[in-house]
Image (cartoon, rainbow, N blue to C red; front, side, top):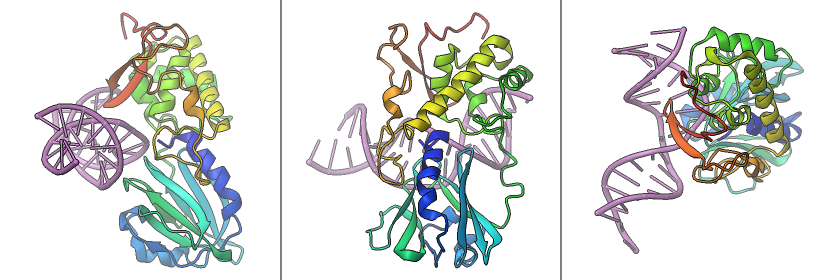
Amino acid sequence: MPELPEVETVARLVRPKLEGRRLGAAIVHWPRTVGDAGPDAFTRNVEGARVARVWRRAKYVVCDLERRGRPAGHLSIHLRMTGRLHVEPAAAEPSPYARVEVPLDRGGVLRFVDVRKFGRFEYRPTLDGVFDHLGPEPLGDEWDAARFARELRARSRQLKPLLLDQSFLAGLGNIYVDEALHRAGLHPLRRSDRVPAARARRLHDEIRATLAEAIEREGSSFDTFYRTPEGQPGSYQHQFRVYGRQGKPCRTCGRTLVKIVVGQRGTHLCTRCQPAPRLL
DNA sequence: ATCCTATCCTGGCTGC
DNA sequence: TGCAGCCAGGATAGGA
């Protein structure tokens, strides 16, 4: 599923194809995808605008729009589970799962393809309040190990649900949480306020390393869903230490990996590398 | 404050 | 082979 590394990859690859392009009359095939304002307002707000800049915040791809050189709102795009962004020739046959299509000048089209329809492709007049619910960027300078250790101590939640909470830390999902916890030697049920400071710093570093390595490999693809905008799969799935590897040997110690459920999420771990402390 | 459940969706898998 | 039923999974809302 698209998490921070996949979204970063999408933003990077789509950027050169979108920046500078002028948007045409959008076709909305699934109204919910464009949010509460509805298809008519969406189409009106987008048509004629130019994409000035493409960037990422957490798991959102954001397009800054302008008209006659002046700011004219934004697109905030969330892929959720199965969303994809395609920039292709207008003549290309659209996917049956295309939910929104926006024609571009110079003969291209931006298509938001989303099998499960959970994704969002919304127009925002401003970004005021739009990202208020998000915690820090894990790869940002302001997110340092000392801060993370302090914030873990301030909560008393199980590590895995806490790390999945976008208001605590923005951008991790099911895959990279499992990977980072294994690399840090921490059990997913461990309570956040019982993680020793040194181990919290280790977790901080492993989260960053995991995300950086995944971005280098253009994210992870293990089913038919996530592809780069070029249609290529990522390759980080080959580096997985635990995700989807239940029943296989731990690459660190050889013990058979297990899959449990934590907060209604499939959770993969090594019970030797990530021992459950007597007191979770 | 934290936890739990339901909701949104559909393709793909399981079991009969 | 066919089909019904179940499930994953990010985010959010509402209840315990």
